[in-house]
Amino acid sequence: MSSTETVRAGSGRATRRASGSASGRVPGSASGSVSDSASGRVPGRAAGKAGRAHDTREAILDAAERLFAERGVGEVSNRQIGQAAGQANNFAVGYHFGTKADLVRAIVRRHTAVTEERRLGMLAEIAEPGDLRAWISCLVRPATGQLDALGVPSWRARCLAQFDTVPALRQIVVDESVATPSMGRALEGMFRLLPGLPEAVRAERGDMSRLLVVHTLAERERALHEGGPAAGTGWEATAAGLIDAGTGWEATAAGLVDALAGLWQAPVTTRPAPG
Image (cartoon, rainbow, N blue to C red; front, side, top):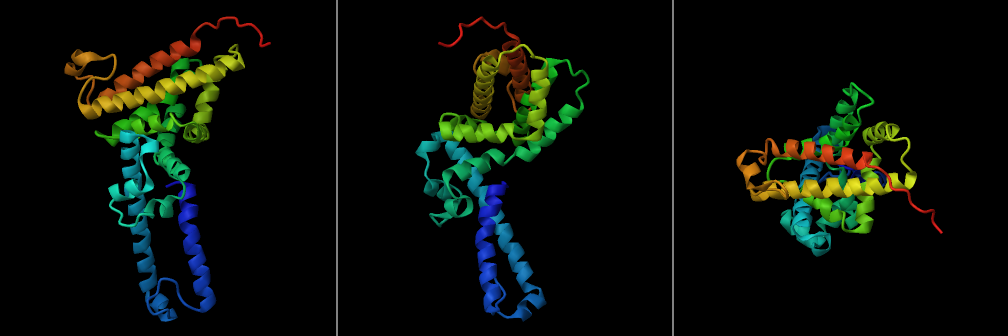
């Protein structure tokens, strides 16, 4: 879970613990006596409560990813997410995550540890630092590998594509993605091989790359879910087995690496100076 969730969920418990200590009661104890703590019953209850809270948060994240992917962020309320997660309390989402921005940040961070580990492993195996495609692969394949591991159906790629349509939420995704150490190393390695690229062109192609990756992954996820071909592949590719849970993401990764390599190495047209 994200640090935002941890702090938010923990703040209320910390307040209750402080209040309980001041009154001489043991928080979470039915009798309020110190003997409950000594008997070992309180830690067991606390562990059970923490486990239930974790399960609730996971259920909410599952429901939010699916509903955002299917309907869009603006069309889904916290109450609907809570109901889809099996929560009777209409304020469950706010209690566990706070604002919608906090919920979005938690969704973005949900698989960060896994993709970070994948990318760090790939970075350690780069044999030729001068190979642009190797650095680009480190940007793409951790995401496709994680989506492959999620199985079919998954909603993560389509959910992130919906975030991309809302400027404030898109910035959260961008900030969280670039902030990881592995992503920074991959970008540095790539940019070292593109020393003559003007800063404005680098920023422009960065936006192009983000759009290409985000929406290509969303389209492939949709195709796998619906059992049909992704854009540009056709039914013959489906029949050949290129679009199934085992090989679909590898084909997508290869196509994205090809496209991004071409995009970043494309010639730059001379542009007039501003003004």
